[in-house]
Amino acid sequence: MTGLEVLVALGSIVVIDIVLGGDNAILIALASKNLAPEQRKKAMFWGVVGAVAVRAALTAVALYLLKIPLLQFAGGVLLVWIALKLLLEDKKVECASATCLSEAIKTIIVADVVMGIDNVIAIAGAAHGSMLMVVLGLAISVPIIVWGSTFLLKWMDKYPAIVYIGAGVLAWTAGQMIVSDKIIARGIGNYIPYFEWVIPLVVLLGVILTGLNKNKLAKQQCKIS
Image (cartoon, rainbow, N blue to C red; front, side, top):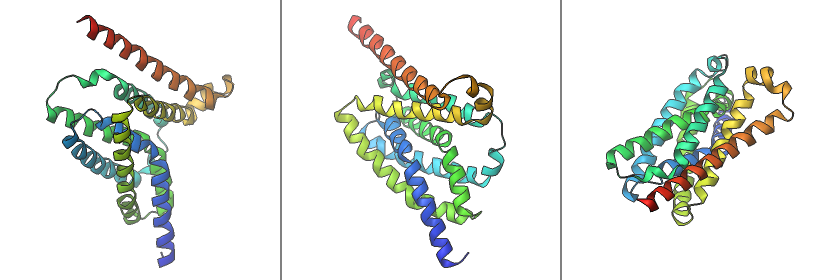
């Protein structure tokens, strides 16, 4: 590629990653919110490092991944579970710092991979087959995403209700992944009016209502004990 083509490809990757990385910033913040302040930076750093490494590897096989049946559906279902897991307040139970930290890092990596399927495909196209462009693009955009998660953490400490908004974004993303799966769309999409909107909305409401109900029960049990 010429110098101009390299700059265009790199710029495209950075823009794609930042635009599609909004959900990831929320994810990083949610996964780190229950850690001690000194542990948060470690969780964000190592979680992002691991996520970037895995995403770069997935980009190399993006064309193959597109051929796997029900991949989007399976990823969406997994993301629903992650959204619920991050939303529930019973994560605040006492635990060793190392255990909490490792769980946060693992959650960031797994969820980033699940949410990053569309991102991987888009970056693979923009990179024109160059893994160097992929790595450079991720190196530039990731610090911006991490900064966004740090900003969100400060607001979530002040306004805990923001956690529900974050979980809602993850749930909506999960619903969109489910309806984007070609097999699911062909199988049941024709039988449900406004399928591409109804399913994400149902998933969103299901996650939020389940989280509210479980947290309400947890608070009542705490009062009784």
